[in-house]
Amino acid sequence: MRRRDLQENKSLMDTILSVFVPIHREGHKFIAAFAVGALALFWISEPLGWLGVLATLWCIYFFRDPERVPPDGDSLVIAPADGRISAVEMVASPKELDLNGERRMRISIFLSVFNVHINRSPVAGRITKMTYVPGKFLNAELDKASEENERQCLTLEDAGGTRIGCVQIAGLVARRIVTFVQQGDRLAAGERFGLIRFGSRTDVYLPPGCNPLVKVGQTAIGGETVLADFGSDRSRSRISQRQETEPLQ
Image 1 (cartoon, one colour):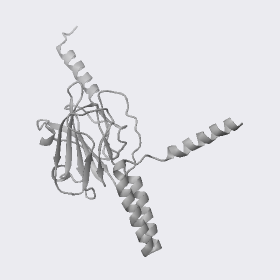
Image 2: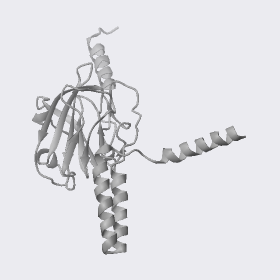
Image 3: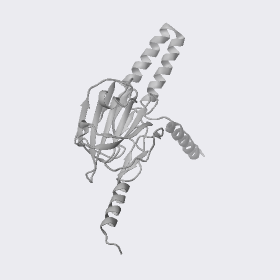
Image 4: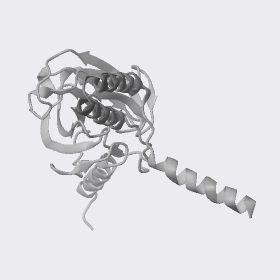
């Protein structure tokens, strides 16, 4: 009986702990600052102190870093961030991505201050170029934010030579883009490569001819939601080319 009780207690503890999401280390100093601020506010006024407690809880929530399980598929493009799909459009690729300025389908994900702000690699591949661009802090949902705001640009190349662009864009509230990687690093699909504080946007530039599988207004889950599948487009292209070259029977 005693052994069974211990097992039941352990199972209950595991269930309770599973509710708590890990906090990224980048948030520790901010959480500590918010907590100290809350204590100081209690000295001034109890109602203000409780507002400080709420702000501290929000800060803890903001820096949460949940585990994600990316779907299998070497040709899948995975959402690099949590948030709302704010734009799906064909645009010229930024010069910082070194994609020869070719027009590509861009999927933009807007992160509110309540979303997870960890950014994850959309594909498995090597970082062939990283470029930091200082800039303004306009509303990240504005189209011109992709050209005028502070941003960090990454170009990833998979094992087959397909290149994909990913851009972290600071927003109206965000004041700092943090990266955990360097040029030349190899990333797995869904692997963490950075975060943006506090509210921002992340853009993905799909390979040429690759059609998006999401629409504006959908909610993306970073590291799990499939944005596109460039393998299926390649397959359709190869089938089409073969049909055009094969003689009629």
